[in-house]
Image (cartoon, rainbow, N blue to C red):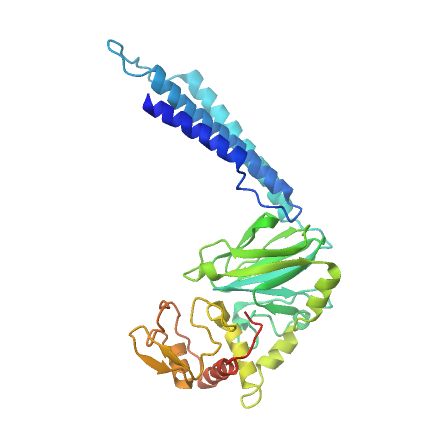
Length: 372
């Protein structure tokens, strides 16, 4: 009897919780109310099954409880009951899957006039690309990734020379305009997720996935990685800024173009070495773990690091000079900074690249920077 009472209380509590505290809904900020409707259908069906099963168990416990002199009847099969449950289950599954298939078909069929934006995921940072004046994105491949080409654009493709690049956590989009989102990953599985727009999509290495949506509310919305992608997964965050078309166009006009980024990153040593180091750091994904504005991150922050003492995991202290930075790049586990896990892989950079990164870190001493 006690078990039956507990089951009934659980059912009542669950229904009350969902009725009085709709925790699963956040304010909708896109056109995908259909996804909310699909989730509601699924919740209603699974909720009805949950209530029915628990109440059935409670009734069975009460009605068929042990009584002196009463024995259970043996019934090996009941065809009518089996057929009924089979059809009922089939109808329930179809009712849950069919709306999702219809909505997914629409989710991956963008309007022809949609704005195109490419999202590139890398442990543990975001980058974005917009087509230039020609309205076309250039082709890309992992073999093209380098210090002067962090997103791996094809340098021989003229369509990519005017592509606008935004390497950092912030993405701007125009209010009320359909947006076609192309997604790719440079390393492992990621997932681009902005909860208020009700859409998410896996980013699979070697593939380009996509979806579309129309932002319907201006504001700033968190961008999350919804696929466990390593120890720094929790730090893979960004911000989607939805703003009027005019504000978006001003932001877009201020982004560097691929041809200009290559030219800056390829600046020879001796003239703009720090700029070259920043380009190398971007290409290698350093900003996913090392902040440059003093904020906490997965690895030691770079601002104010060069030339200052750091405490190591073994309690010793040393000066963060060019030699230490070189060793930290090529053998990160040799001298760990206290409070940080040994998660950084070794990088086989030549002396010129290491010197450029060290120059960039030195340039951050007390200086503001907008990378992070």
